[in-house]
Amino acid sequence: MSEENWIEVGSTDSIEEEDLIRFDHQDKTFCVYRLTDGFYATDGICTHEAVHLEDGLVMDDEIECPMHQGIFNIKSGEALSPPACEDLKTYPVKVDNDKIFIKID
Amino acid sequence: MKNNIIILGGGQAGIYAAREIRQNDTESNIKILSEENLLPYERPPLSKDFLLDKKNEDDLYFHSIEVLKNENIDFENVLINKVDFEHKKLFSKNEDVYTYDSLLISTGSDNKRLSLDNNLNDDVYYLRNLEEAKIIKEKVSDKNKITIIGGGFIGLEIASSLSQLQKKVTVIEIGNQLMGRIIPKQIADLVQNTHIEQGNEIILNKQIDKIIKKNGIYEILLNDNSIIETDFVIAGIGSTPSVKLFENTNLKLDNGIVTNQFCETSIKDVYAAGDVCNFYHPFYERNMRLESYQHAQNHGICAGKNIAGVKTEYTSIPWMWSDQFNLNLQLTGICDDYDEIIARGNDINSGVIYFFLKNKIIKGACGLGIAGKVGRDIRITSKLTEKNTIVDKQILSDQNQKLNKLIQKQ
Ligand SMILES: Cc1cc2nc3c(=O)[nH]c(=O)nc-3n(C[C@H](O)[C@H](O)[C@H](O)COP(=O)(O)OP(=O)(O)OC[C@H]3O[C@@H](n4cnc5c(N)ncnc54)[C@H](O)[C@@H]3O)c2cc1C
Ligand code: FES
Image 1 (tube, each protein chain N blue to C red):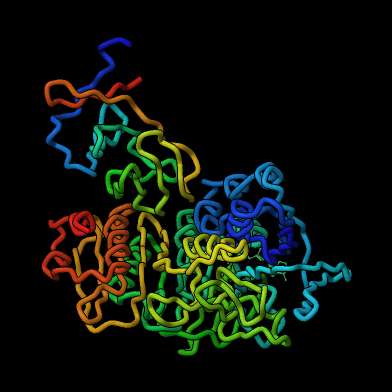
Image 2 (image 1 turned 180 degrees about the vertical axis):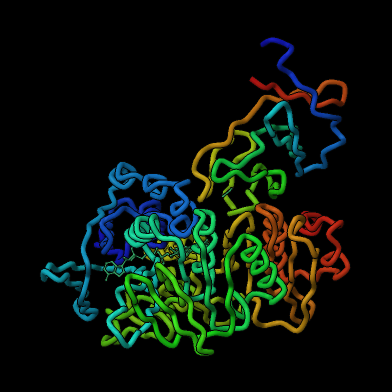
């Protein structure tokens, strides 16, 4: 793993528990989540239609799309409920000195 | 025990029921009988992304045939045209006989049709299934002026799609607002403004008197004597539950097949789910009929459980959406039984929601916003409704106060 792919997202207190923030990097959008057991990251756009998941609802380990209630598992990206059927890409996250980093390939 | 389970109608409710039965019952035979020679597919894109060529036929199917084979679910393309509930038999046009131990009726709904007093009935097009969507898509390709009769959800979605295909669209609505009285007038007006901004003409409070065809062009005469000239006519004037087959039987019908909260009909071992049902909702303590994606799925699942012997009440809070241009409209709960309305937001860019309360409890909500902007709050509203939560009106009306705090506390 090369170090340069870890991109700083912000400080850990920028995300409330059971919530998410949107993070744009170059021409891509990501969502970074704070769950009870840590931080996670996925693509920021629903796989069903091009809608930002930042406006979605985080419930336990799941993010529900605000457009048609497609549901994804935040940790695995798995599409759990239609109309979403294509999985969401996930990204490794690390926390260093209260700062969140995600690894973008 | 190994049973013969038949699912009549291979739409959304039918497929979800079939798979749920299999989850709970590995032995019984499960057979879906479907008038359409297509595996179960999603209808919402028919009026939207399918017309716009953003989705093709293959994108619409819920599952591949392999999934059905793996789960040992049979799918047969047949139109059933007679039922004998007493002897538990269904008959096709060719007199094929299907015998069941348990039957699920999930025949969906049919479009209401205009009745024109000349021979132009076949010149008016309707949209309910993939076949009709393909025909409309093909026929409008070389047309310019399109008239849509009926300003309900499906008519407006078609109007939005055809406008995006550079057609000149006119929508004629008999009522004094779009999408019926269930949608707050303020939201209907915002939708109407967007259609107008995008170039569609919206005519309210007008009825069709007559349609005449002259040299391949249609003249639609309205009740105020005005005339709309058009190249193509589509009607979206509502739908009725598909119950014709049962009209002369002892199955209890009243605006659809009457079912209890367990999807059971008035006849033993006969269940019903989806658009075709007028079902009892224990939460609202009344019967209702819904035509929505989420309902077809959840009601199908609930019927599947009950058929497989897992007694389950249907308590899902109603929810539906409509997408037009870049707008997403959502409805949750019931919006026709309230003593107070509270508004949240006034700009579609950040979302506008109307909450319907009765005795201080939220019963339903209707929201409109640029894609994605109202979904979270509407979803939270469903949860608050389900829990009969009394919410501070100040919080509801203030868009700066996040509603998710309200459910996290529960
Ligand atoms: C164009 C369109 C757009 C929509 N958009 C939205 C939307 O944006 N949001 C939303 O929430 N909902 C939407 N809906 C509603 C949603 O798709 C329906 O509520 C849902 O499909 C109902 O599922 P169902 O299984 O009850 O019926 P259906 O999916 O209609 O399936 C019923 C099936 O039964 C078959 N059948 C009927 N009679 C017989 C018979 N005698 N023998 C054999 N087969 C028979 C029919 O051919 C059909 O295939 C839309 C519907 C349409 C038509
Ligand atoms: S856009 Fe996310 S579920 Fe449809």
